[in-house]
Each structure stands twice: as C-alpha cells, then as structure tokens.
Length: 224
Image (cartoon, rainbow, N blue to C red; front, side, top):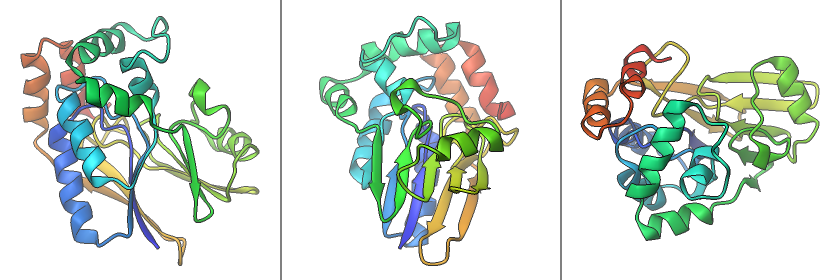
C-alpha cells in the first residue's frame, strides 16, 4: 500500500494546495495528515475544509487542540499565543467541532500515526534525536511510527522499529522553505521525502494582511 503522509500545515493554504496537487500525481492509496492544520497561518477554515475533503486519516495536533479550546496555551510563546487567539475567532463552528473530534493516535496496517510522539500523545513530547526516537519506540503500538510536530524531517531506525518524521507543509524549520511531505510504500519499506516549491511570498503577505505577527511571515522565507 502506498501512503502520502504530511503534517503541520499551520493554515498555509498556498503550501497545502501545491502538496495536494503533487500527491494527486503520485497515485497513492491513502492520504494521512498528522495534525496542526491551524495556527500561525492566514487560512484556517480553508485548510481544514481541504484536509477534511482529501485525507483518509487526520490526527489532532497541539495547535489544533489549542485553537479549539482543549488545551491550555499559557506556555505558548508570544507569536503562537497570538495566532491561537486569532484562529479561535476565525474558525467556523463546524470546523471547530470537527477538529475537536480528531483522534490523537491511529494504528493501521502495522503503522502508527501520531502528531508528536507515541509517548503520552496528549503531552506533545518532542523528538529531536535518535535517543529520543529510541525512547519513543519503547511505547510504540507498531513497528513503524510516523510523526510531525518538530517541523524537521528524519528517518530513524532503532532496535525496536522505525520512526519517521514527515516534515512540515506549512512552516518548515529545516532551512528549506519548500513544503515537505512523505511517501511510504508498505510493500518495500521505501520512504521518500518530497519537497515542493510554492508561492511563499503570497503566504507571507496573507499573514501580514491579517494582522498576525510579522515574524510568522518572515520565517516562511527562511524555512526556520
């Protein structure tokens, strides 16, 4: 089975559209979103609508929970906090309810999908190193686990299994401003990280036009 897996769209409609266009050309069997549809970007409702219509599996992310009032945002930095408050005001009632209903964890075809980590998914632990990945796999429910959350792609093979970060569609932080997603073939175990160019400046301009923090716009250009 061939999967397209992406994460951390963060209301960046320009990036999402380009990724979905590319996925359509890949002839995949299943499309999975690992959460953080909203936060930071200027198009929360449009992104939620599109993901709901195109994805077979959608996992909840921490910014999704923050935007729909499920989690405390007191620990969020200034920029994330302002974006959450703005997003709460913009989200439709239908999209708020739908985001509230997203699962934290899905297991299918011997693959686990989770936003941050298989360790206490609701606590949003970060995985930055192979040691972090090894500890995370001790709690995994499958031999292959896909995550997002850090916005930095990786592919770690541990003694307990494989943990793959699919990168970020809407706010990459690996120094490459292009949108990223991952293809995975269950038959061969092949993982392909795909980078897609999109109109970063249009996404940046939309953030500024909506009165969101300019830093959230500028970092799109840097990929940081």
